[in-house]
Image (cartoon, rainbow, N blue to C red; front, top):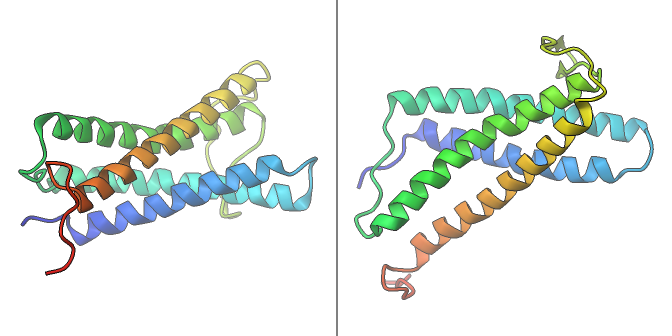
Amino acid sequence: MQRYTSTAVLLHWLIALLVIAGFTMGLVMTDIPGITPTKLKYYSWHKWIGVTVLALAALRLLWRARHAPPPYPASMQGWEKSAAHGLHALLYALIFAVPLSGYFYTLAAGVPVVYLGLFELPVLIEPNPALKPVLKQVHFWLTMLLAGSVAVHVAAALKHQFIDRDGVFKRMLP
């Protein structure tokens, strides 16, 4: 049985863990009232996670372009393969779109992104008070779509791990 390369698996899990951490950090930081040192620190961490996800996603996409994924199991029905392919495409799009929307939202708010406190990312748009609330909503809803897509991805992976084509639990022990 053909499997994903070790590099693909590593990138998958690094991105997955960072997406979960960024999502969690986003929920926590936006729930802190006012402007506090803790809230500002969490915003920085959230941005650093987003930039890291974006970089790892680019690496993963380059890796995948040169290393074909294994074929879907023969036990998958045609519609399941199509759904899996579509969901993977959506996940790839979102792991780029969510950090980019957050980056542009931050720039529209007039706040620079300083990665790991070491270097400032390029300013691609000037502060724009009219665009800021639009990009905030775009970032929020893309994030919610990513969270839902991740949940469907996990559910599908578990289904294929534990339930056969006929809807019967697979035998786990010999």
